[in-house]
Image (tube, rainbow, N blue to C red):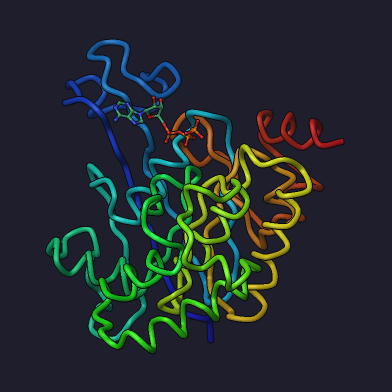
Length: 279
Ligand SMILES: Nc1ncnc2c1ncn2[C@@H]1O[C@H](COP(=O)(O)OP(=O)(O)OP(=O)(O)O)[C@@H](O)[C@H]1O
């Protein structure tokens, strides 16, 4: 028997602009890159579909502007997609399109079932709250009220991501970029979510800090068995982390498969260029 996907994403499209007759009934050849030449509507992502299985890391790689962040923002309910379906294999939610749930239901799923690490820590952390309060904030949003328990979870997670406990009361504003990312990771993990979204989490960090953060992600995946969607423009990051990979270009998925298979035998010209740039 085949395993049921934990998350099923079908035909997610996000367009900026009203669209016109030409592009709404398009075949993609009517678009120049990701926008309509007639009405200038931008199709940030188009008909993106994939399954995510329990415990796997799915990589999404593509150049800047290919639609990776928009897709993640749709999945984490930061942005409302123009169309598409997302099913989550969870009691009470099966067969329900998560995009059609109420704002309150989406908020609950976001706080209890999903974790997000943004490229820019400003989007994931309150820079003027202490590191431990940032973790507490997510726990409170998920309904936790026991301060002692929240403090103990916070300290445990900060230790896990190698933030010294004596710095837990400091504001992330005063932390280095790598430390801020690690506080975001601790916050994202606080509710023990089955799914973690990671958006360009090593961009802007220097190489040794990048390696540290990637090691941390691998260890967390092994320890917690959490499923992850990892977005990066850097195929080296995807190679290190992802079991399976989607390649995006101009808002569309142009290639997908096992990461090893994509690295060894890239089919699309763009993927071939990406792979050869690694050598
Ligand atoms: N609010 C918006 N209004 C109009 N266009 C947008 C908006 N947000 C994103 N876009 C467009 O959608 C496309 C995809 O952007 P997106 O940020 O998702 O790409 P990306 O692959 O994540 O790139 P990067 O890593 O540089 O952020 C781009 O052409 C971008 O200009």
